[in-house]
Image (cartoon, rainbow, N blue to C red; front, side, top):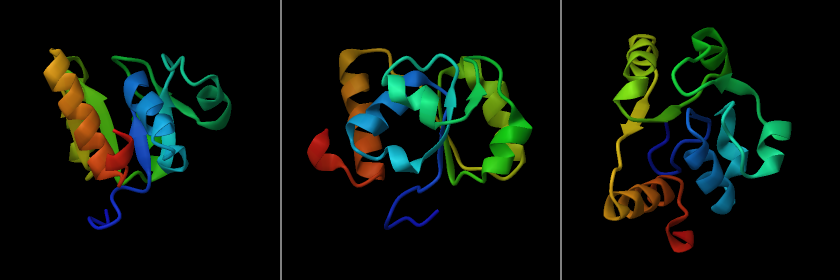
Length: 118
């Protein structure tokens, strides 16, 4: 991953991350999404589905060559463990309060150079 430009090939294991990246105008960086993605409607038409909330198609994710996989909660820890074992960068967040959600949004925006849209 180029740390100056941020990740360019992102797999989103949760719908929230997908929605935020679209809101930030960074949807071109998304290479795979969760089957639970609802918003925006366009996402399911444009992006390949690579996971449910607790299961993922590891081989499909690896084939996409992401430079970052973003997930949520310890519920996805087995997915994260397998991806890390295969050499991928994984960010699992576990926001539980409004302040933690705000912090996640800001961190994600900063990561993809979209701080002004946070």
